Picture (tube, rainbow, N blue to C red):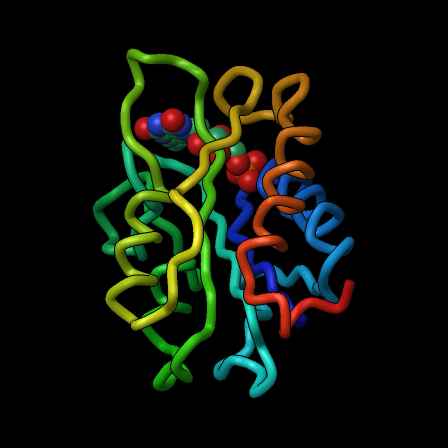
Length: 167
Ligand SMILES: Cc1cc2nc3c(=O)[nH]c(=O)nc-3n(C[C@H](O)[C@H](O)[C@H](O)COP(=O)(O)O)c2cc1C
């Protein structure tokens, strides 16, 4: 099985979480982690599983730069990368995760929005959106979250049809 993890990580916590997910996935897959800035314009032809992750900002995903919004970014985010992909081959599995503040007072999840986008693009969404918590507002990942991310990755590997797994 071949898996690709695409991550948007303004201050680095997402990258750590993405690497931990990849470690979990690596038990059953050949897996690569790429920053969204370096994400391919087209998915590899033999890709079985796409995992995307981005930070929650202002209750959702980050927005592209409008010149007005202080939370926006000038570069390419997950949204823009997904929107720029060509047609998706049938049967490619996908899942979304995010990092966010661990507080019931701060709602919202970038992963939920990404999951909707994946479904709209005809990916086979194989897991509910998952959130991993950061310490404070900007991280690092909260204690225990990297282990949880590894375990989520291990679980994801089992959702892909057995014929596609490498072990
Ligand atoms: C300006 C700003 C706004 C944020 N808004 C939210 C929010 O609405 N909800 C939430 O759960 N986390 C929010 N966070 C926390 C981020 O989700 C967290 O810093 C990020 O996921 C860490 O990932 P990174 O280190 O890869 O940037 C915010 C953080 C910043 C800096």
